[in-house]
Length: 186
Image (cartoon, rainbow, N blue to C red; front, side):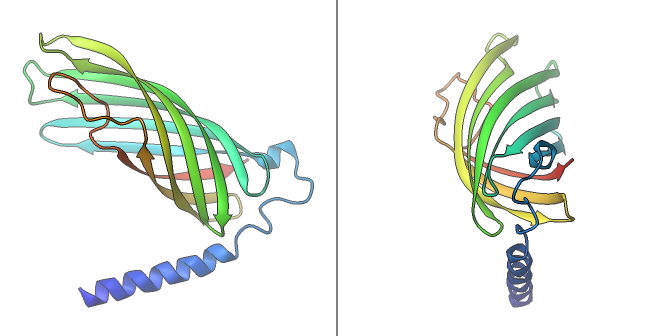
């Protein structure tokens, strides 16, 4: 256990040193519009006995300044529930707007508004469609992989989250949301 903890601490320290070297070349004094655009997002999948899902969530953003960026994201998730009879599948989709502020090296703050249109099964066994609005706040870090490509990891808290009442359904089962993905410049 000590070895794993020590190795993790060493890796985090080396990552922090690497992060400190990122940013000077990120944006020149007068970057072009193309240099300010970034794309990315995430892919997700889970396969289990109760349910399986596949999700795609692309983002497009714009670096307003070297430290501030804003953008839009889109989300699609297909879920198949296996232990409910009869088996059924749902399609959820949504959009979001976000802003990020890099406050120290690789560390950033993130705020986001998300609109999600999702399907659920009602008490009669029929599919119902509903909407869910979320306001997320949190932060994360960005690890460059190359000059225009990097990996991000963030933890967000849903300020709009409320525990579902009996008979209600929520697309999120907790106010905490963890995300990981890749972004790339053009």
